[in-house]
Length: 136
Image 1 (tube, helix red, strand yellow):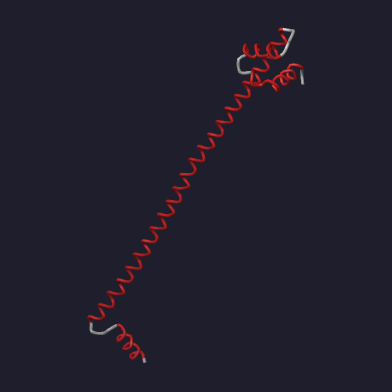
Image 2: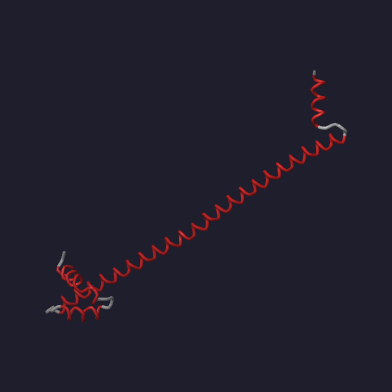
């Protein structure tokens, strides 16, 4: 690791809260924290600190954007799952209604047959015994 990075990390490790995204402010903060005798060295350290802080902030914003994007994706997926569940429920209800209608229709047909046979004068039980006698 070169000298600029090493000194910058050392200063940031102890006084990171005093630095920001502005180069001029970072230079002033560096003057308050340490004694750097050479103007060029101070500028390089302050510049590296500025670059480092900007990079951290940019990465943090990107991380927040990814988190928000994943949350919005989950919110989009959740209603679609609910929609699928509602469709399944509606399909099941439709099947139940159709089955109930078939059962009722079958009962009506059977009842109508009994009424028709009764109108002839024979009850369904009598007719079945007559049919048995004829078969013998």
